[in-house]
Amino acid sequence: MAEAIEDSIIRKVRLGKSNLLVSNIALGTLPFASYRTSKKDLSELILYAYSIGINLFDTAEIYDNYELLGRSLNGFDNAFVITKSYAVNERDVDRSLLKAKRLMNRDVDIFMLHEQESILTIKGHMKALEYMHKLKERGDLKAIGISTHRISGVRGVLAFLELIDVVMSIINYAGLGIYDGDREGMESALLDCYNANIGVIGMKVFGGGHLTRSIDRAIRYIKDLDFIHTFLLGVETIDELKLDVSLLCGLQVEETLLEKSKKKTRRIEIEPWCTGCGICVDRCGQGALKLVNGKVEILFDKCVLCSYCAQVCPDFSIKVV
Image (tube, rainbow, N blue to C red):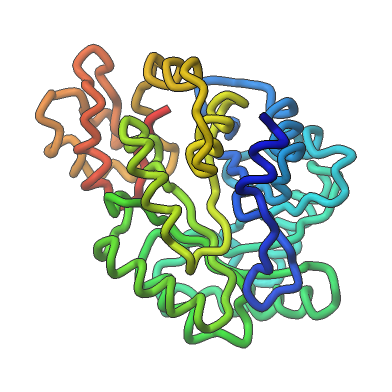
């Protein structure tokens, strides 16, 4: 299976104007964030991903999983690591990078400003961005960029082409999680970045788990997006990665993998950055959400995983796990 997958789909692409040759499929580690309710070992999944040609692995300071990822990548010298930070100045950048390097026991390759909303937000982080650029010029970083859930964030990159190498953005067939527009608007913005030689990384292709019931449709959609260099897949198990990659390959999918995926018990989780705005509570027709002390709580006996709450959450704080 590993050889068949590697020969069929896993290939290396140059990530925009950077000199990095990365796999066209990357592994996201949000499912292994320290605050997730299910604690699993990451090493076997990393080993399998690396064995089929995946060499790009994504994390973030807020995930608090540096030690876990570092142990899992021990010995994989040709792997590239992305991390993201809310740094606003030089001191913040140094502190974030030092923490990442110390806990992972390896260098950060791509460093990103996390959740940038627009050109104004990027300008507000200009001290950090300019310092990141200096570190890259000095050889301490291989590429720098931003992550965003907004079309305005992607378009903001176009104003800083001399500084930014890579943009990571949400993209999926339903447009789920795009705060300020629709799928078509995001596609247009990402295409403009691609044509400007910016490396483009697509994330949340399954809408934070809300689109896994339509996994075939989700994967068919991303297969046609030739302006995205690599897609992040956030999976928890080898079987889930095998299924996703096999569908991307157009390989015959093992029935056991499909059955296991269909039978997996899933549940809603609220991310710790929930602001308690209450929009999702009003949207839920099942009465499965309530506000308690300024935070959303879930009544699991009432939740039917309809995902209507995620469609209106302005911060994409609701995930299916």
